[in-house]
Image 1 (cartoon, helix red, strand yellow):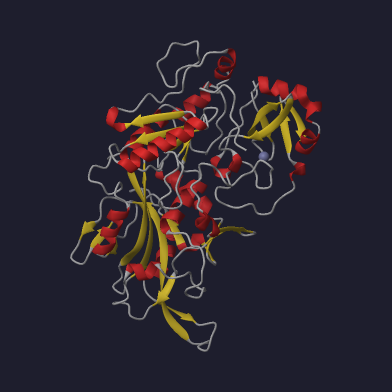
Image 2 (cartoon, rainbow, N blue to C red):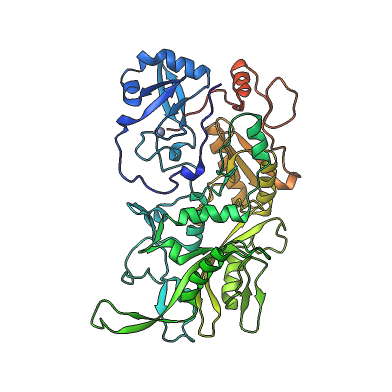
Length: 500
Ligand SMILES: [Zn+2]
């Protein structure tokens, strides 16, 4: 049986625009085990009709070889002539430059503004963030307004310059998505076809250490403005009592050193060149909230797991976070969920760490991002059922058109919608519009209206021969049976739909 190409979410270019339009001439595609140049195929499709027909019978798709693992392609027949088309949701799995590549994934939440803040250079990915990593040390006591700290343009840019920047939340979501942390199963390890694969997927858990490693790997190739991200951002390494870790301790000490107090820095440009000024440094910290922020005499105390120092912030910032992330700070939050924080911090004159700004990501215990406790419950069941799925992440607030999850182990992909609110007109209207859109596109939908009871059965539909009440109902017909037999799930539409 031909191996189903595995999609590696880590390799996905995510939001990165194509580096340079490479000619599609060197792209080869595979049809039923035969490899051929795409340009030849497009010039004379009739010569390859037998291969097309064979590939459509089994495995039911073509394969683009622009990546090492290969990306599935839809085979369609129009008036007796075969064509290849991009797989639904698959555009951003292709190498930039491949004719099937698309950064405009239907399920990517990237908005144009966020995309402008991210650019790909010879040295990796450059991201513009909306705050500076140094600030004048004068007026230390009075100048601690968090809003003032985060609204400044990046260092080196004149104030007021029109420039797209990523917010803390945008950066956190970008990191999560680029690290493949919004995809399940985890990308690490070779997962092969067959029963072992099923076992591997259902037996997999993702721990903070795995999450940290994935984030560190992404950050290694990122510059925040002019600075290498690893110098500015620290992903908290696990602390294990009784297990000394000199590497961790050294990295932590190196990270904390600039935050211990203001530093005298030489001025390199302008009329005051050659003199020095006092600067305090700011750094990013990525870790998991230990518990809700605790009130103190002067504001709030924020503790992160595995991090030895508390962060302090003003009560106003705590209130702002509670308002901005209501599900993460809800009193009825699912105790199995976790809250990952990307924090902008600086040292105070008294030797404390001050929290200036933070973004919060609510996740499952496997660090899959979710928007609600209901989504968390469903995601946990999808993991338990061994499903493959992604959680599309928004880059812009107010973008509500993304599905809650996308199951990538069905053909075509199945969207998952968790309907948590009822009786609100705007929500009901949006729900109706979404369902109408999916129906028009013949996209299979797995729905859970939380007001009607527990989640539906999320196991993969069984082949038509078996009796089952699972969703969706088994389709009749030999085509559906054959596809189910191959482990490609039978769905409502026997022919893969085309998203080109
Ligand atoms: Zn390709």
